[in-house]
Length: 264
Image (tube, rainbow, N blue to C red):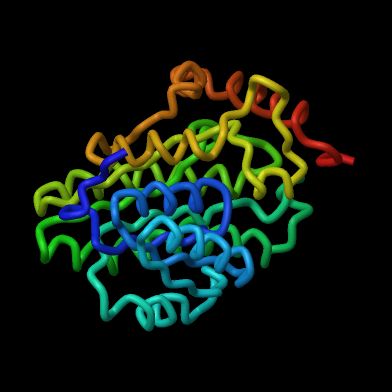
C-alpha cells in the first residue's frame, strides 16, 4: 500500500499503538516511509512495535502514557512539538469492563468517557489546528458498531462511540475547507487483545482481523466522514432502523451470547 507521505506524513501520532489495529496501522505506515509516535500505557509492547516500525525503515518514538491522565496533552507535546504530524489515528478506545451500568463505579464510568471522548477531542483540536494551518493532514477516529445503537453492558462505551461518529461528521466538513481529511471508522466484531481482555471472543467466521481493518482504514482516509468496514455494512444498515427498542433488545442478545460472566 502506498500512502501519501507528502499529505499524511512525515509523522503519525497513534494513541493505542502498542497492539491490535493501532500496531497494524503503524506497520502499514512504515511501508510508505511515515514515522510513528506510538502511545500506550505499557512500555514493553510499545517498544516491540516501535522496533518493528524501525525494521521497516521508518522512525518511531514511544510514550508510555495513560490517555486519561490530566497532563496527557502536555506529555504528548513533549514528544511531538519538534516534528510535523500529518496524521492522527486515535485508536485508544475501550471499555474498562462489561456489566450493568449501575453496578460500575462512577470513576470507571468517567474513565471510559475520558479515554474515548475527552482524549480524542483534545488531540483532534490540538493537531487539527496545526494541520489546518499547513493545509494538509488527516485525522482518523476509530469507532464501533456499538455506537450505532444502544449496547447494554457497555453503554458508556457505546455512547462515547456515538459521540465520535457525530463529532467526526462535523469535523470532516469543517477541516476539509483547510485540506485536512477526517474519517470515523465503524469497526465491529474485530479480534483484538482489548476485546479478549473483556471476555468477548467472536466465533469462527464472525470476527475480522486487525490487519484487514488497518489496511482498509488507510485506504479510505480521504473517503470521510464515515467508513463502515464491509463486514459490518449489513449490521450498520440494520442499526439505522427507527425501531430503537427492537435494536437495543437485539444488541443485548448479541452481547450476552459473546460475553462470559457479564450478568452473573
